Image (cartoon, rainbow, N blue to C red; front, side, top):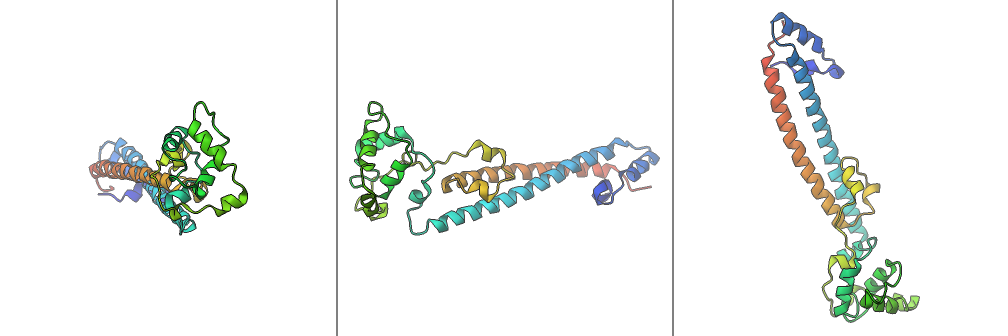
Length: 229
């Protein structure tokens, strides 16, 4: 079987030599173009695989960076700082409890209240309105004195939607899956980054399948071409 480099002009190959050989053999010259087209697809998939591997490493580094910054704090609490809580989920939770983690206020209450643009309408979200009005009445010294959530004697379970621990991946990230950088990934939560990693893993599996299929097709055509004469 001929060396595939013979078909790659950018690596010093000369496809015309192979075409001329095929003509001398009275063989189908179009097989040369088939090999070139399939090899181009294979090389493109190989490049995409390299990019996806790089992105996977960037995601791991970003997650590590976030976890290091959040060391000593509750993971979900530390990451839930940039995504607005879902009002419906929060209303349901605060209908049962006075505060985010039950019956005592903590730093998480202040953090989530700050991420709301204001008190919701009391006729649609009375529990959230009551809680928000109460928490925002605290003075800076009152807020500073609030305990961390892990210091509470009792902690009610909190749905991630209510806390704002978002896992949905923004469309911009999905569209740039092979171009992601730490700058693009830093605004995401750890939960979102894990979802991005899943998307990258799925893309890698799909790309690897394409690599194998394309290589098999390319080599099958390559075998039909005899030695250079």
